[in-house]
Image (cartoon, rainbow over all chains, first blue to last red; front, side, top):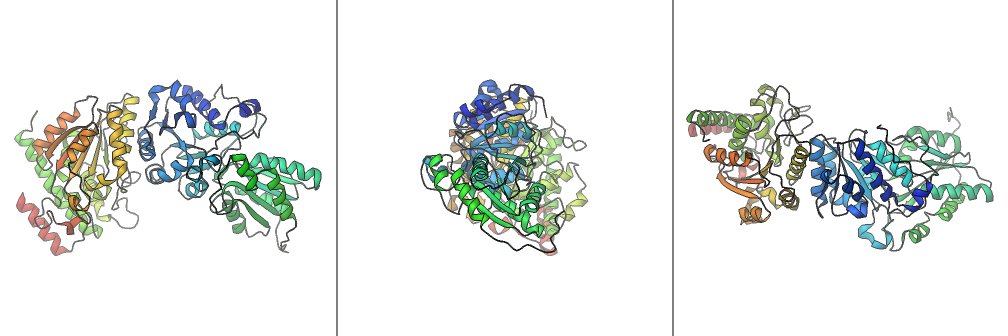
Length: 337
Length: 277
């Protein structure tokens, strides 16, 4: 990875800037060091904050108007021309309006187009269901060659954006609207695409989560330790694909209770990715998927929706308590090594 | 400069041979989009044997001209051209559509040497071509990007998103060609979903439109020569063609949009191509 300065973000930055804002500034910084980077948007330069790159490099930035299909097709062409395009729009318009361009023009040809999709999940709750996106993990996971990433906060967004530049092939990074509080104190930690981060050790159960759920899981784990005496491990599975099988199986072996949390439909997302790994391993454990239960979300501000759907710390505490009461059949022959 | 007699004859000879190969591919592959492949053979011939600066010995040569076959179903037209141009042995065309072959009904740029873009889902090519043209300008590279579309394909809204963007970005290094053979799968374009006034639509989107007979090498040459001179306006060559061109019983016959061939049909088709000269 290129050595980059000016991208050292801390908790103050992440508390005072949205993840989008940090993304835009990070990309503008990366642009100074890598002239292959170009930017694209479909009339959402300010909204996705790629405007920071646009201002720094106006001749390397293309706004195609409200035409997402054209944007991703052009991005494919730019990649074919030897460049590294970063294309930004809202998640819903990336993965669905331009879904076929992403699948056929970009992923099928295995081109290094970096899709930075904002306003994902229910983070833009008050915009209504047209602007929610709780299906993108499922869509992007099913596309060969695609790497799928969901950073925990603004600091990690910057880490992911820097790391994806040199990752071969297409990368999908989904971020929210971004007024969520930061999860990390600083960017002084090792980030590697495809390598989960254990945020907190624990022995009674493990929460595997991504995005906004990481901070909530951390807060819940702290409460559960104090009030219930529970030791809850929290794994930040920032890369949904390729999934970190090793971290999942170790958690199964160590804690035998796994709860997944995601700001996504429970069908096709992080929970299913984790569940597949567990099922194929043949190991028995208590397993629950927490997220949107195959429903379009209600309308409301993000924090109200997170509370309503149990994606805040209180909701996570409830889920953990529910799961601690559940039994499973231990296998006598279970090889725990 | 106009085509010399010798040059014209050479192009006609190549096009005739390519039409014969298309019929072979139709047989080897078990079926092909023969009508729309034959309609673009003359366009592909003049592109690959006069205009496009490509190097079969170095297919990924960075400065090469780019060609996007947006009407990807005409791979049975493009792939024999790439073989004849020397990107791979013509013998390999016999594998067309078969297990493990690089050649399918729609071209895969990661498998077909010399093919610049995977295509097959209609309405995608022009956007990719816009990206390639922007990339050339940004990297200060001399290459031209040519995108060949079908007329029926222009029902797709994404074509017009791309059409709107190319003049906005002042892409004088981009050349669009539409194979106006007037047919789509379900019938004549003007019956299924009318495109006319077609040239005016492209003009209204800001393109410099040139209408030609897509089987007349002199007209194609004149239009391409004009398009090759860099300006800041993209050129759209509206090439009026005949679906199934060169095989009398296939011409303007929608049955041959996609068809398979037995040896008897192949022989009849080849006889017609050779008779037409």
